[in-house]
Length: 459
Image 1 (cartoon, rainbow, N blue to C red):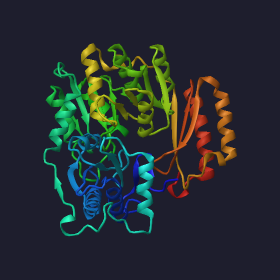
Image 2: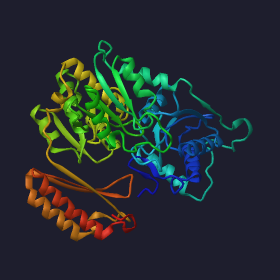
Image 3: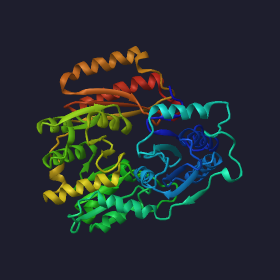
Image 4: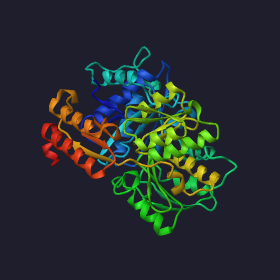
């Protein structure tokens, strides 16, 4: 079992293990030693979101990589999917993002991309982790120590934002325009604050921008895809056609329609899949969702004779299933959607552009498009835990879960799983009666709080 890497890189509270300068320095050295392909002056490109701690981790990674003979390209604050794109665009050996995505500003994390723009696989992550945790010195992949002229250098990529804006605009049909579309854009005080407003404005939309003034501490705070209420109220205030809210690193988006109703990743998948099928572009005639995807998505796709494949939670597992099945569309309820025709990872701006294209092509409002899916009531409760023992080793809890699942029968589901990025147990219950499933979810949550709850957190 890996000790550093979770479902989306390394993550934790800044200045506490594993997110300390010392460990991040070693991550840079280990990645440089393993992924340089034996080349002198191999190239890494590093981006970050807008967290205060990003500065120190940017410097720590740079020091580790250059000490091993690698060169570093720095973009400054930049969306995660933008680094995936630029890694291939500038022909870097590795892309690195310093971000804790949707987490509070006190957290931070490290994500790696290979030279093909895809996130590193479990095997490579495990090897990096082995080197970091070993007591042995990390040495360069080629013989001899790196000294004098062999030490790497670092420089800024001054046109990174411009390159990414052009790339994003090319994902939108060139014969279309956003002229006449009124938008609210919530940048979560995160990595999209420079890029997103420019893209939508240059395509012709009238935009009202909120939460695009990062100060290092306000990322994701009461805004963005985790808190879409601000976006929704602003849409109603300005009578906009659509609201778009990103998370801190820009790989997710949650929308709202012209009435201020939230449109999540499941609804985005449904409308996008049906549009792609009608256009003859839904390769594999399927969509990958996760075990958390609403039953309503499955029913909406089934009605259109589109198959739905469920993966484990996490964009890397969605992508693995997409590549295995030859499918071009997949994602999560959280708004992390992968359009493989356009980028190698979830890209919130691309997701918004694809939905906007559907609106323009069909001439339909977002409320109409989202109406193709009827949502089954779903309750989710997070329990903060002190540890993560195997769930199967708690027989009382397992019996309770099985009993509730039996009561729901075919009309609902129960899913209990640990978060891969936070000390949380996630409990999801789905069924036709909201009050009933709320009670069921609370029963399960109370059991796990008693068994493994973190009492110091008060929950």
